[in-house]
Each structure stands twice: as C-alpha cells, then as structure tokens.
Image (tube, rainbow, N blue to C red; front, side, top):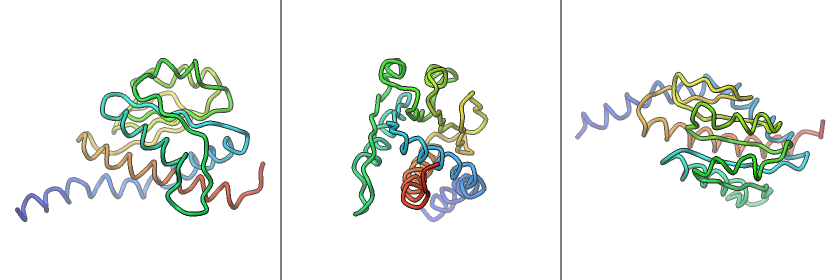
Length: 166
C-alpha cells in the first residue's frame, strides 16, 4: 500500500509544480475575466465527456460563492452542449472550455468572447488563454483543472475587489 501512495504522489508532483510555474498565465486569465465581469459579462462553461461535470462545478463556483462576502457572478454551464455557445454567448462574455476539442472555442472567439481552454499537455487551441495540465493521465489532468479553476475564481474575486475599473 505504501508503494501505491508513493507512486500516486510521484505522478502528481510534476503536474502540481507546473501549476505554480504557470501562475502568471493563471493570473492573466483571471484578471481578464474580472475585466469582463466589470463590463457585464456572463461566464459560459462547457466540457467534453467527464469534463462536463467540471464545467457545471465551475459555473456553480461563480454563482454561489462559498466564502462569505464574495460576490455572486453570472455563470451558466452548457455541460457538453457546446453547440449552444453561439446561441447564448455575447461578445462581452467569457467562454471556458474544459478539455475542449480543437474547435470547441472557435465560435466563442469569433463572437468576441474571452476564451479560456483548460487542456491536457500538448494541446494548443487558438484561444486567448491556454491553461494546460502537464500530464496525459486523465485523473491527474482533472485534478489540475479543478485546482486551476478554483484559482481563477479566487483571483477574479481578488481583482474585482481590489482594482479600479479600467
């Protein structure tokens, strides 16, 4: 049993440290989100397959803050109904695709939405912000994505509270 725990920890060490290395990219994405929220944006989330549940979780984080005093922000999850992005999205909105396909955020970007892709290692979709989990192991990718989107929520809240509108 100890060997399995050591292996699990070792498998996560690199991807976990990579989140810290990617801090500046995460901060830039969160600041861009805060700027959009100031302008009346809604967050539109979606994900493929199992990532649809994470997309729903992310939308809930923004609409129902768990920390007292944090503001609720408008968000909707499309689950895996990615085709609804151009139907519901507006140019000022934010689209976050979790484990998106190569073209899932294309229509959102064409609409003028801020586009953020939470991907696995090696994926480079044409979006405003790519936040990649540096692993190919699906469960580790998911753990890293959950960490990143919680950071996005927290940092967007910090920017909304501390920065004057620009």
